[in-house]
Image (cartoon, rainbow, N blue to C red):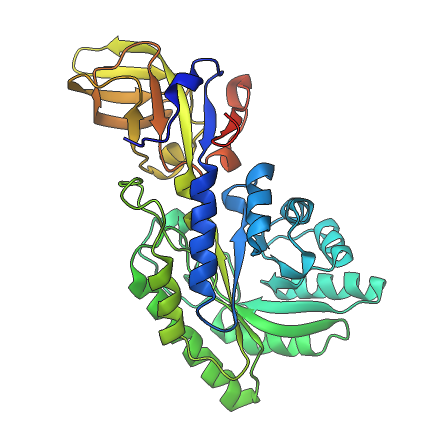
Length: 386
């Protein structure tokens, strides 16, 4: 059990709430910065979609890394938190004119573009402003990451990026535009990847593509963005509180063949914030069925969607009991059969009023929360403010 939960202070708080270990977040960011700094030209952008809590974003900004955004709202949130626009990249298949215009006005570093129609839209909006927008083309490398089907993004049938056979036409289009400047290539193969060989496979694809562009077009671009995807240990949050960033960056340093002066950009999200966050919930009832026991808590699928959406696992711990373990299904109050956090798990004998912690919820917990059943969104509690 995590020793840093101040359970005695939870009694006065309304549940459910997201609890963030700020010291662990700072330790994780320090590890990211120190490991990336071992290699010249490595730049990290925090993927804001993982968690855009304003307090956490300010901590991220203070670390000096940039931001990876997938909406205009995220661009504005990054800048409001203190992340310089010059360190902001904006990806996504469906950028609206309003989002593009606001990002141009803010002066962001780069748009990661994913289609010819998007290129035309950015050109038109940049021309209206008399500016030149920096562009990186998102290329679909057709690498099958070893992760859940819903969070793999690098296959030919995924909606993201342009395929190899389209790339030359897209480059021709960008280079013909007066108000666009092609500055890089962008890749991202998926999320929650724990097999480092997936990143090796991506490097092989990038190396092949760069070699082809140099040989056929004499083209060497100054920036290569390899996306993110590094996973975390949902099954062992205390044994592995900080992911193995050393191995991750070393893999790219060894396997990615860079041309002189090329900069490498990373978009890490989950691996930065997942372990620092837990969803704290209280037991409302313990219901005994014919063959099962149900722990019914006051958090629902709308507060932590991943189990219902992906069948994802989060360690669940009883912070109030050290009794003999029993077998339970842990479920929420939402009027959906999918409102289940886990089935047939072992917990110390659990009673009404006990506090449970759903671990590794710092990524895609608060960020995905919604108000189904007219349920109020949980608040956030920070370890250094309680």
